[in-house]
Amino acid sequence: MATIEDVAREAGVSPSTVSRALSRPDMVSQETRDRILAIAHQLGYQAIQQARQARQQASTSIALLVTDLENPFFATLAKGVQAVADQHGCNVLLYNTEEDEIKEDRYLKLALQQKIQGLLIVPTRGTASRLKELDDLPTVELDCASGYAGVGQVLAENVRGTVLATDHLIQLGHKRIGFIGGHPEVSSTRERLEGYNQAMALAGLVRDPRWVDYGYGLESGAEEVTRKLMSLPPQDRPTALFVSNADMMIGTLTALRSLGLQVAQDVSLVGFDDPPWAKVMQPPLTVVAQSPFEMGRVACGILMQNVQREFVLPPLNIRLPTHLIVRGSTARPR
Image (tube, rainbow, N blue to C red; front, side, top):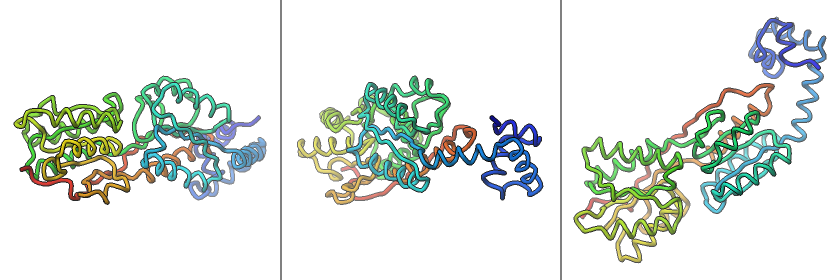
């Protein structure tokens, strides 16, 4: 059976040129395209290609694994994926791993049994080892990176977003700023901590190690950490807090309310992510906003390019912009 390499060899061009001649004729000269088409017809390749494309259009399926579908961020991300998949007539198999490595392993096996042609995944801490076994499956990671170099990634500008948030608090006059991170082994947490450290260092502020702690992405974890930070002696207690995700922000708000502390008046707050409820809180929350819909849309677009080609493109690492939205939860320290 003729392959794209056979056609390229006979035509004296690269396989990518053959692919463009057949799918994007505007990208090659007419002479080159005519020669490639003649050789493809002679070898029977074009008929094979058309049959393969017809099969793909009829049965293309991809899997999307997210870590928490109850989180509006991941629900919106899934909508972005679905929007692009629908344009390509592609089925999306959706799985919720709940950051459980065992569930992730089980769902990946289920997805492979369904003959998926591509994978979109929000990694858990065990994802890298599993992706090594799926080296020929087009894959794109979203939101955080597993550490496996062989896949594409669509992530947020975590460092820059956290620098903006921390610098905003510093400009208001805060010198004691607490950092409540997600899981310390997750790449997005490490990057947000890097942004916090950069901003503090650039401002010449000494960072007390007690001001940095982890809620492991959980509402209950952030509530516990907030209580611990607010129990420090008054001269050491943070006057402002940066909270790494929306779920943990709920825990922080719960702890502050139970301690009788007022947001902005007693403690300034900045969160990463802009959930729908952030703007209707009293006071409304200052946040670092990112676009989960765009993240899903871009990641699925990259995956579709790879699924529908004869060869996989080199892995792309795309960073989507974040921006600071200042609302009422931040103020000058007392």
